[in-house]
Image (cartoon, rainbow, N blue to C red; front, side, top):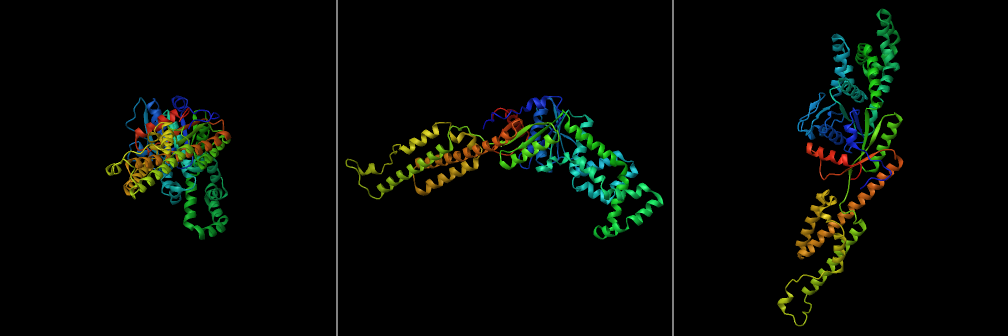
Length: 466
């Protein structure tokens, strides 16, 4: 599949080579190869001389496995085997550990200990709604401020939650400024006996009701936590707002990753529109797992017609052979021995038509269409061989069955190509301003640096052809 004329090419290497590019954020729906794309970009940037760290927020372990690391945690780990002058590090966000580090860095030892031991804090830091996205903002800000790497590549969570970290400052502010939080903070701010009087009188009805639902101890844990965190709330807002502005800065580039499928490109369109609304710098769209064929001149219709001709011709020839075996007369002048000799059949019109269709292009069995579906080819081969043995037909018939199966497989692949092209063209028609790079589908999964390097090569070349 080639890029539509309305779609600008997405040039990956200039983006990665530009020293002004400091942050690349990969976002997209689940199952489109976003984690692999982020890792492949990291490998290519490092091998072209950048000092790179890849931060994954996705809990999947694919990134560590493909980079030859036993496990990833909150500490960047260097990846061995990079071929080039740069360096590659990788890490996976540990939400609770990041929260702990913030508390330890911005509170005195006694207050930090009280916060870390608080039951409500332990629940909040382990999985409170929105905490992961906010901690991702914090970690990104930490990495950028340390200036140990000249390129940070962020792999975001799947689906629309991938952009939730854009809302983290607003949602955190809403949480901290909420009536419930302000009410719980009021006694601490009033202090002394007045505070205790307020707590006993002003909160008696609320604590009585919520205590029955949540438990009185829970409310006391929440209040203790908020009292201890009071001096840190302003710092949370300040750092989140600073990271948000960092994402809007010219040194940041967003890459939307999608597959050539309707649902994935619908999500990609949502990401594009949301990023534009937030004034985030969009570099382009990476269209992963695009199918192709080295025999594209052979249309689905012609391949299917050739397969039918082969099958129809085989049936006619097989019928003649059966008629002869049932005792049809031997032509005059021929010996009985000659009737038992299996002479090659003369090519029929079906054979000629199928041969013309296949030889019109390169051998179908060696095209990406066939290589991308080895199970289908193996199944067709096994089916043809089994059918040939069970029917007692000659090797010519078995070859015909295999050829017909490959032709039908090619026809199905060409239908997939046409559907993907229509889907992509609909997206580019709606968003002609978005640069696109297409990455051809590979026959297998990526498990190591060599596979990531192969993906990176296809990604770098995908802005012009696929």
